[in-house]
Length: 216
DNA sequence: GGCGTCAGGCTCCTTACCTCA
DNA sequence: TTTGAGGTAAGGAGCCTGACG
Image (tube, rainbow, N blue to C red; front, top):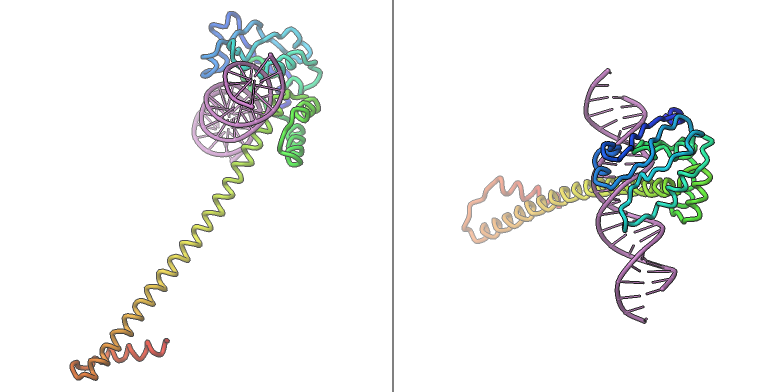
């Protein structure tokens, strides 16, 4: 619940950084440096926080560093701001509020692309970090693409089914035409032989010849 | 102008967390 | 109460592009 996130006390025991492993798998491999003990009970007591939760190695890209710092310096006067910085104390799953999501959705419907100005404006407007807005748009695009892929798959599946049916029908038709042709050619052979007087008449063949002729 | 480097964007895949049946 | 599935925020790798020296 977002409401519960208000005083979420994720106790990050980061003293020394040796024993504290907030992210069970991947983060273990990173040079995580945790300088502060996060012990925030309410947003307005948040000011002393000073955490490098990304723990980027030297020489690696640090494209989000400004935004993280931004987050650490934010005034925390309402729930959504606290929400935006919740994972400073570890990888805490945060949930955007309904209002935040619906506003982002609205913006996405208007224009799925996100330029830096729009990103920062939205972030400010919704009390989120620019990175969060960026991630939301990325995931939203991915969802759209997935839905589209599913829809395309359904269309192709239907198309495939109808083509298979058509294929079966045509095969049957070919089969019938072949059998009719064989029937006709054998009956003409019979009449030729009868003319020559070299064959005895078969009543069943005669009968089938007449029915075939009726059908044509 | 060509080249190397860097920053920032994107997609894709994956992980971790949360919710709900 | 537990558990598994589904949804989703976020991390990371790899690629591309534009700016800059």
